[in-house]
Image 1: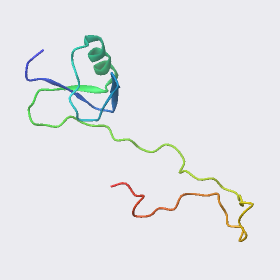
Image 2 (image 1 turned 180 degrees about the vertical axis):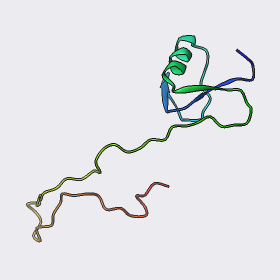
Image 3 (image 1 turned 135 degrees about the vertical axis):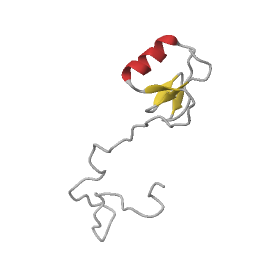
Image 4 (image 1 turned 90 degrees about the vertical axis):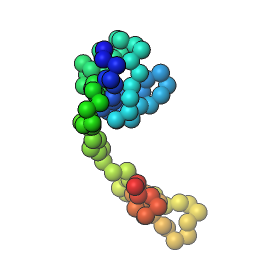
Length: 95
């Protein structure tokens, strides 16, 4: 292995109780794991040429949270509907 090469995560990898995010340098002290990451395509070698490794981007594949129907609290006098999606507000949006 060349001293200038770094093993970079392409996807999120949990290894030895640490989460490595895409683009972070991975440890290379375990040859079996290095081989597994390279074979699975979850890591790539970076030779330090300045180009960033291609990082995969997640796409949501599940339905938005929330349920249809009505559920009325026995304590509510107005019969307010308690089931549904959480409203999107500026504070809840991810940056």
